[in-house]
Picture 1 (cartoon, one colour):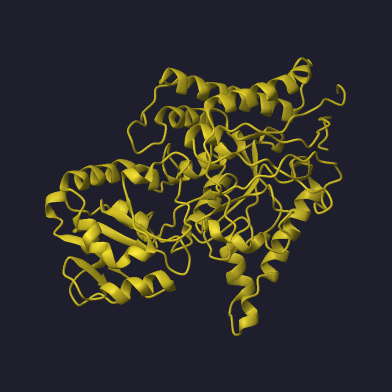
Picture 2 (tube, helix red, strand yellow):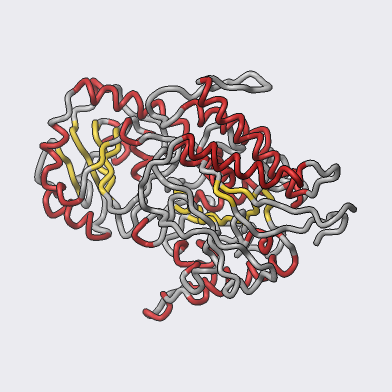
Length: 480
């Protein structure tokens, strides 16, 4: 244990159901830990009931309040101690945040110590009052400790451009000295970030790939597990929570596979991923879905060049290769066949890809080899209503954003009906959808340094919610 602190931590995780408060959809995951597989921990955990993270059920606010009351009663005795350990202070800080969010939902208002420059309101949010107060509490309290162990290029850096750019941009932002979320000491951190780059590991360890065996994830998995072992041996934080307050972030296609070699080790760990495929192990109540943003060199995102609604003559548009079975189906039915639904594997001479999106009402966003596609963000930037065509894709920031208010989702089996479906949408509804696309755009904009409610803050807010969604009850071993 770090010198100067003498906390005895019992590994009991209590769900507080705050995500349910915002979603009213998914149930909270009881963090069930098997000591025999967590070879980094010498503590004996108490197991809670198992749950299925992807089963949608409804939980009332009363359930949250009763669970939170249980949390308060269990920890009341320890809270009366004059000298509190760092984890105890952190849990009490989180309890204050939960209480503030519940009050905002009750009063349909917010409480802030400073003037709020932006107030989220409207149907694009599942619960704007909960989201706003939660963001206020995050800005006031949330601290992230980034482990210092490791060296570039595999750790403490990542790609800043192209399709995996958000990986490097996030690492760079969270590690900058003046980040308001950067913890000055690990004892004040609410969560712990493992700053390895999956994209860089693949680039520097695997490339060039010359045979099928080179695709095996064993080296990637070994590097990640070795890194966890290093920080777990050196610091107490992984072991005290069995990784529940730790997270990684990656946009690489291979990122979900890091846990396959030892699933129980990563059972409580938060994976922040672009490839948020629930059929491949993505857990909405533990993991975080983030948008894929293609950054050209020297830019922070696509330009805002969309036309007004009365200058968008194209009904639907897609331009891209036949990556994955969904795109193959799309191209089979619509490639170069219709002037209203313009689907091209290769753009004809003359039209510009970005310009065509700006002249289109509905931008088709089919999944490729993986569920995420940068076309979703490109469509939002261009003021084009995204049409999501995917399977098992948990959309980014779905904890707080109501995608049905600014996008259309078409099942894969209905690809032949795309024109009929889109033409059947009343023009008045299209106008409302398009206005909400413009409204939600601020949450997908990348700023450096990050700004409130932008994409990096939305990523951090998703992690913050998941940390609010469980408590690490503590017991005091003795005064120091």
